[in-house]
Length: 321
Ligand SMILES: [Zn+2]
Image (tube, rainbow, N blue to C red; front, side, top):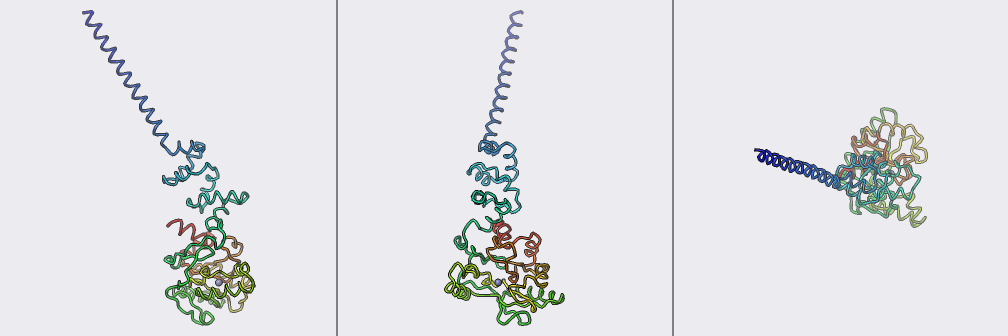
């Protein structure tokens, strides 16, 4: 009897031991597995890359896509990235360019770094040529980087009636309709607008540019004229507009008609293309008379956010594509 009891005890003992070992083993297994899993996580990888736990968490709140985080891991740790991503117009594709630009412009505001790189100012004018995407139609961009081909001609060009313009001025039909609505509204407020320049083809622009280049050299020509293919006037979406009593480029900026355009043009789909104090962004001197048709919806965003078309295009068009 005693023997049987002893045996039973032994069996229970063995059973409990095995059970305990199994439990410990699987607990250990789970822990090892969890550790293994964590080491696969981006949080762990970012910490290994040099970021603090807090910064790794912040980066992961912003970056959701694998390829974005992989890119972060492929460049040296840089805590400035934490500040860059908080900027409104931050574009992830430009990250390495922002960092390089910051390196060269150490005292520059982060906001300005974002702006300048977004509009390609980390490249020299005319040394980073991008074909203008004419499929964007009203939203195409032309500047010192984006170029129209020599045979590009806008569709639906119409001649602006000489009630609203000097002779032989052409813009696209849609831009013309919008201009007439704007003209009527300005007229009701006491301003008679007049267009004195609009569509220019590639050849015209080449002639203008070359004649200045021949007489004054190319650096002077670049200051006052766009190179052929780089003039917004070739798009058929730009007008040089004055008021019948204020038609001088030097003083139009001080006229109430200019003020009227600044306050109202966006309601008709027009934007000021080369505003004052934005020369570094647009690449052009302030031109109070040069207005560009983009359509009402886009004009309102540009007006409300007080950005240039170059900034709009980089962030809202190219970045979203
Ligand atoms: Zn112009």
